Image (cartoon, rainbow, N blue to C red; front, side, top):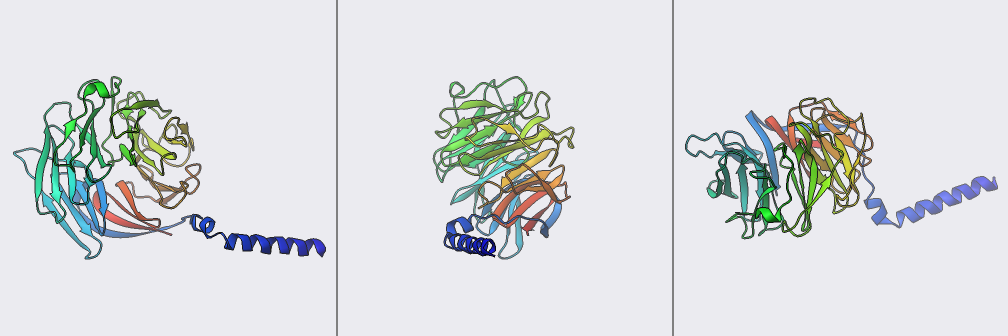
Length: 353
């Protein structure tokens, strides 16, 4: 009886301590087991780039299309950009407080500045080269932005802006790391560039798959080897995300063998200096987009790709499939329980429960 009483007293004391520590309770992650899907719109369209701007979900798509879905009015706005006889395909999108930016993948590279009502689009950068192929674009803040292309020469191909996107210029080749033959990037979900503060990471794939890190907004770079599968044209890192400046996750795999679930995901806890494979031969196959769940202390991860939508509650060690839909290319979280995803022929809202 005395032992039982002491145990109860200890448990009550522990409960009291936990109750007096709201910060600890606040960081406790809700573990998801199901999802509820709302279809926002359907169309014959391919969407690989979205950005959240208050109640508007902006998207950039194929056939020169861009637009937004307004969650308040539940209405879609769409516009088409045409230039000569070009087949414009947007796979990168980014925002500042004043404008939206959409970037074409192929030659010529066309970067448009779009007003927040979507009615006006102005060409602010053009690059003509048979090798040009822009994969991702992000902004550090309202003035400074960055975009990366497949290599035009033998190094990273990067453009930056320092005036809010009005003008863009290439970083000189002598400031950029050299690339291996066959090393490039994948325009899968606008997640080749990740930014946290002034820290920036760019991921590559193909014959070589590495992570490039800059602590000074692209002025200097370090190259880091990764254990992700590489050596073929369609292997490597397709997507990346960082929870903070230390915890990060890279994923991808072999696009031509979408069921391959090994050497396709890795984690870092030191800001990308080192990477370790995780969940080998389990979880998911080819990955198009990975995102950390907000307010999850770096434990919650969601991936879309060839295995549908998969989720981890322990930093990527174990995974469960929450959605079988293999047509989703990209995903972003509105809050810790709600995300927007898009891909082939649709945009959806996902409520995690």
